[in-house]
Image (cartoon, rainbow, N blue to C red; front, side, top):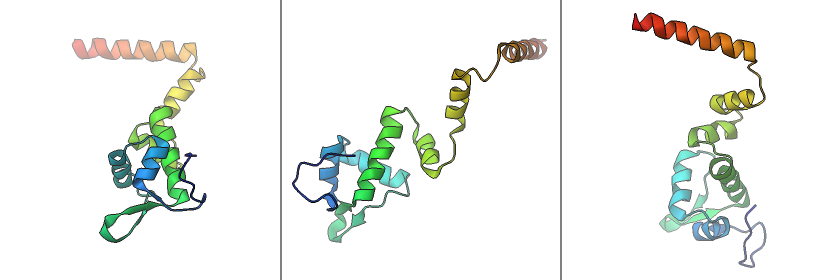
Length: 121
């Protein structure tokens, strides 16, 4: 979770600048994420000033973790937040665990070679 040095209570509302300063994420990125992630909806007061609740700050930290540290695309991060597995990440994870055995991989490569030769003929 973000560390704030503004001496406010833990449950206090934070401005976009305060959240940006604590998380290291630029304000324009936070505004963009608000457009891309429907779950991220800080309070907006008169003049359009944004106030992030503690749950908004936690969501920003989660999005930051997924996108900037775990290497998710925005689409993959959206799926992860919805609880839907990212197909590409699942495929990479499966291949890194050796889910596709050597025999299956060899057969798939042979099929691909056959298809390439059939298409070139």
